[in-house]
Length: 390
Ligand SMILES: [Zn+2]
Ligand SMILES: [Zn+2]
Image 1: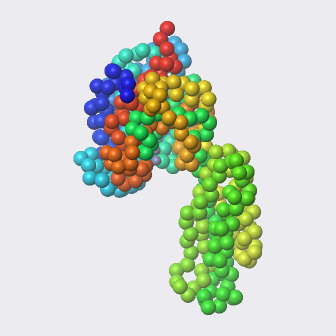
Image 2: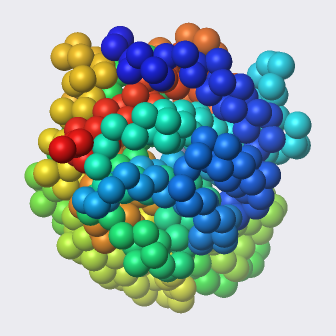
Image 3: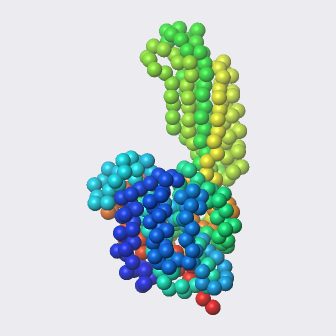
């Protein structure tokens, strides 16, 4: 793997940063120690400007080298409310808080690139290093945009990478078009009339209505969504009833809707309402339907994908530069791509089990330190390619 030769010796330092951040994980918008660590390191590298508190706990570093275009590179810094179960020397010191999505590794990769770029300056223009808070469900990317990220730090394009367990360690995948889905949430409360289980005729049973509803919601995907489009409707929570001989008053059904095309999202939302209202009416009860829009789909820009792929090829080679089918997970990098051209891709974290690298959001997960220099080299190669000297 042709890691940039001046980045290879940073492996030990990057591993130390990564493990330090891993050991001190912080949840969304509480990344105070992490942000301070990042800002102190950036200043130590000689990054020209370091601004803290962008989008609450976000940090932005700016590297200038003459006039020219500007490119944004992004890492996320937040951890998850998971109790770390693996026993490792740098295990989380905070109860029920863990870097189980590898954002510690993303942060260390971008720090490595920052140190290299600050030292070598083999680019013309500006590099904006974006360390964002709160990727896990709290839209830290949007918080930075709302705090004027793109006005205060103008950039032509922005790039990000997420580690992916199961893909070969250090492989890089940048694929065109939608790559991650929109992730909406819904909640339905069916309000009937409870009573004695032995006298169902004198009740309006929300359990039966919920059973019908859960089945019928799947027809949104199978009968209403055009077959060539992508849609997932998953009912993931059913709550109702406390006793074997009591029909409850109400049942709550919740779940998630995933799609790439916003028109399909709108179709699902509206078809779900029709089905919910119809089932409630058929069973003689009221239905409360709430629908919450989550992260939009993450859609890569064609020019940016070309640039990212070219940089990936120089680092990971033909064999290590892969194409990935879209995934129905969601990612708040989508907000950046709604505003600016850019690309979001994956760096392989290795096979499951290798170095304890189990799946994302797993209590045994760990970022694979052997890929840190690859990720940093990718960012550096992208900058040197997109902001060439002369
Ligand atoms: Zn995650
Ligand atoms: Zn993540």
